[in-house]
Image 1 (spheres, rainbow over the protein chains, first blue to last red):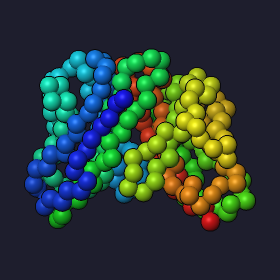
Image 2: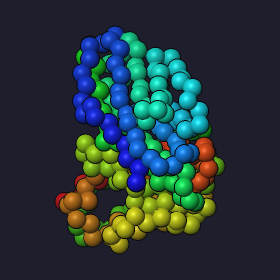
Image 3: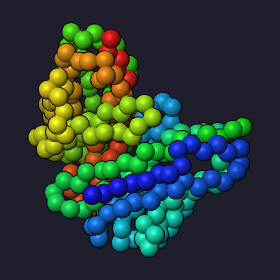
Image 4: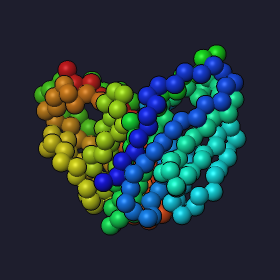
Length: 116
Length: 115
């Protein structure tokens, strides 16, 4: 069974600090997909990134960066120089490639509060 | 256009009412999803449509009835709901049901309150 763990329930940082959100996953599949979503108070889940299991290259997009470590089954998300607008709940998710339909398993989410 | 729209934004209904939630996407996606999200919890999958046909029903009670009139529209018909059904209902779409590029794009959700 697939599983996604986000051990940090809530994090508070002061604006301009860097913050890393942890995500650890479990899967038996050799091919799978990892995602990060942002959910601001308005409710909409905003897609941030998809990472395929066969691509361990880390990615940077502006102030966001993602560190995929297959050896430790982790897919961590770092926000550099955090801003108040980054305040949201962040979900890590896993999609295995097994069979026709691949259900997405979400972690329990990490609530990030950026204090001005 | 990478947008999924949902109406209404908020809905309050009694347990005897019949109402519908609507979802629309114009990205040419062939898979559409309904999720239910309770406060401080991750989204829970309810239904999946692929090419306008119901592919997955995650053992959802029959008081929730999905409908996919065409490839761009997804409805969720509600009847005889219970107060515990109060939640945020999220619609999502993806290019296909299976395959490597299947990130789901979510709508803003409908916040449902059942009195």
